[in-house]
Length: 232
Image 1 (tube, rainbow, N blue to C red):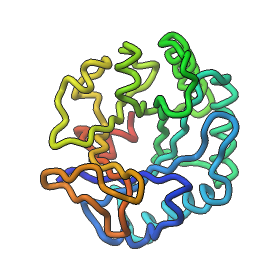
Image 2: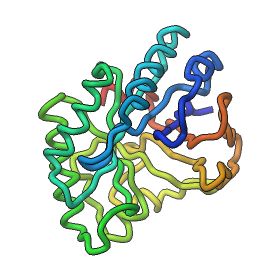
Image 3: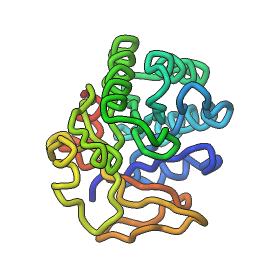
Image 4: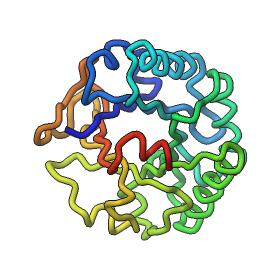
C-alpha cells in the first residue's frame, strides 16, 4: 500500500501523533494548516502540533516520516506579504528543517467571486517564487476543481501536485486537464471529511479512518515516496 499522510487544521483539535507514528506503515506523516491570507495563523495550536509531529517521528525512529505545512492563499492579497506571514508563523513554531514540505492550498472557498484566472496565476506564482527565494524550498500545489473551472493549466512554479478526488479511482483526466501528469502527481487525497465527521468516500484497499480517529487522508503516490518529495 502507498504511504498515507493525514492533514489537519485547527478545527480538528489536538492529535496523538505519537500513536500515529507508532502504528507504523502505511501511516507516514502529517500536513498541517499554518496560515491563510495575512489574517489567520494556527497560533498556539499550530505551534504545538507542528512540534509534536516532528517529535513523534523522532521518538518512533521513523525514517519515512513526513511533516508538512500549508498556506491557504487569498488571491486578492499581496503574495509577498502572505509568503512572509507563512514563514513567520513557522518561525514562531520553531522553524522548519530540510525534510519538511510546504504546500500552497488554492481553492474556491473564501475567495472573491470576481476573481480571474490571471489573478490566481499571478498571485500563486509570486507566492511560490517568494518562498523559494527566502527558503530555497519548492512548494507543492494543492488544487483541482477550481483551477479547472477557471481554465488554469499553469503549474505556477510548483514542482508537485496534491489533488483531492473522493472516488473509487483517480482518472488521469482529473490532473491532466489542469496541466499535470502522473510523474508530477505527489499526493491523492482520497478521503475527505464533511460535516459531522462523515467520510465522503470509502475506497478500494485504503482505510477510511486512521488509528487516531477520522480525518482527511492522502496517498503518497509519487514514485520514490517521501524521499523523492523532500528532494524536490
